[in-house]
Length: 272
Image (cartoon, rainbow, N blue to C red; front, side, top):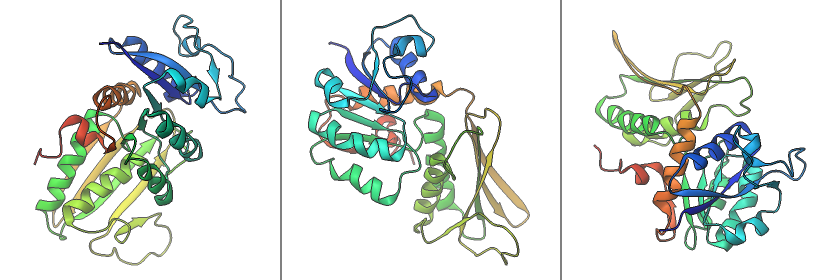
């Protein structure tokens, strides 16, 4: 079987370079294109060299339509506006679109899902095996414990991250809300400051820390009367997200059009 031909969106960024390295290490994929914003000063640079590898002849370009003519999929960890711009082209070209972008609005998510009757999309707030297992555990624990246990989610990322709470924190919050059978949008507490009053029963709280080079630390705290249960995950290298995204692309290659998540990729939907 021929190797899957993949485009990396945001190839000049930290995550983009990690994705280029992951593809270079893979037996099942090859880099077919490196996408960057038209305003980037990295346009024309070699994607391999930027990723700390030997030159691979793939130059960073802003022309997704041209590079996607000979591609099977796109790995997209960029920013919401860029991801939404990529959606239509990926669908038109029939690419597997792996979306790891965070900070997307509900309307952005609706746009992404709108193409899945004719396109293959795999979307997740986090592509690592450990975090997705954590989300499955959080869902089950939230289902098992009543509202006498308050749920708080704490996350920390590097100082350059621009959105909060993180996509992973929101993913864990949705898992907890699903376990409780409630809407996260209606039971979310964020940004406490000043005289906030007592905690509202049933809310899922979020706290965000930023600093240094932290790749991503997440804890879900179930705080009950006289006891606390803490489920945690620490990411030590963003390569875990790159390898997860690559696994998702290879899994989705040849699947029928539809909307998929890492639960589908990893077979976690029936874990509990």
